[in-house]
Image 1 (cartoon, one colour):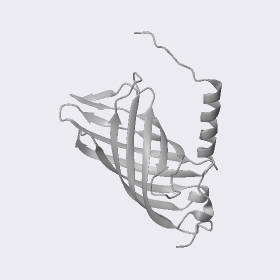
Image 2: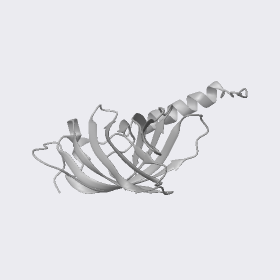
Image 3: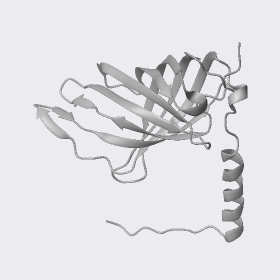
Image 4: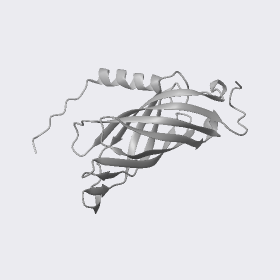
Length: 189
């Protein structure tokens, strides 16, 4: 393995970057400005730093399980999943002979106030492609996100990574949401 060189930024650059991150992190969704229902377009990234070795489950077939670190930004101007970090489980099954995959999992996103959003997602059996498509559902939340439900289409693209053993994905979630039950903190329509 070749040696790697690391370049360190100056203290002024680090301070400016830290200040910028603080400003981004301070814009959380307030309960009083979250509509009870709406549409969304969310861009996300997913990173698994060290993908586990898959388990062989047949000729040309493998299965795996991992947990990815996530970030999400709501591109539609809404508060749902805007500037939130999360973690997602992933349980892919890949058939290299048939050139197909399927994948299923759950996510937990959290905002700066400590309120959570819970998601279930599925990529049904499909051929390998540059962009894969699945579906998802909001299955609840805590705090300002209590009573959250909704559905979405998810599109994802695996990226070439510069880190050996890592898996990086970028994608988009498109759909609608609503708050069910009594959600006193949600703004009426």
